[in-house]
Length: 145
Image 1 (cartoon, rainbow, N blue to C red):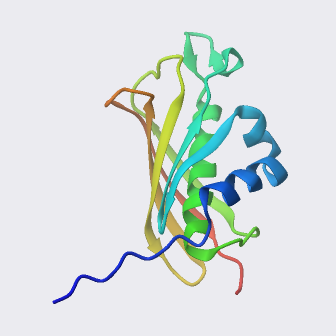
Image 2 (cartoon, one colour; image 1 turned 180 degrees about the horizontal axis):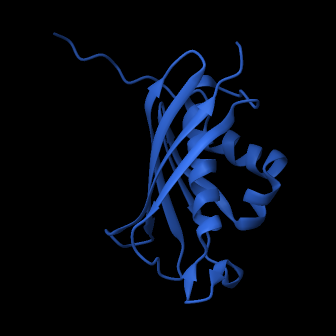
């Protein structure tokens, strides 16, 4: 049986980064950028900044949650295209290891895309390290098409 060609993402890295600059102002101010987007997957980076650090010398949880949320948004848009009204309905975070004060990478993927909901997961890593610092699952509400 012939292998089916991989589906093409409905939003490019350039388009998503433009959306961050234009519409996701806080994500832009945090220094988030998409590095890879495929159909049902995305990798985003947040540049490390000293204002992300909380007492104890670790990157603050809200920074990691924001990165995961924006990554899941990229994953959803990779399948739907520019559906700006897709919104988060739930986000569950498990913090697993203290991240180092360096850039964070977030790899997201779709688990299930339905008519009204999209469910995905993200894995967050300190740049250059193999140990998972957080695991996130989330659900997005999909606007009527």
